[in-house]
Length: 141
View 1 (tube, rainbow, N blue to C red):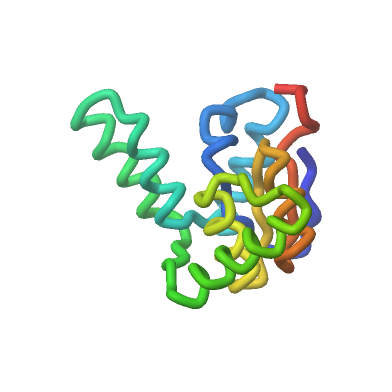
View 2 (view 1 turned 60 degrees about the vertical axis):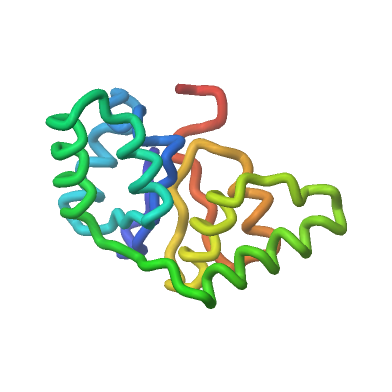
């Protein structure tokens, strides 16, 4: 992954959480963290916390997530996500995970990108104004 050095902030999707130490992306991920260019939505935070194996693991994940930029969910973001799914329903693409729609709408609201390893964000970027950025080429991790 090589991201432009334009200062853009990226919400990350759960699809990349388990890949952050992969040699193909680890150094860029670390640099983005160091430069405060990674953000998390409550949706992703809950999904990541769900992976905790025990209380100590949960607390460690909480600490890591709390150190990141946060974007709250608002009624406007929820409405935008629902509108995006409604628009996509006209093309039979409405069966996308609501979590992805909320993440994408959050990014669009903040004028941020979404860093992911999930093609659903490419579809959502057709109806919401955000940059859909793969962390690595599809199928490479």
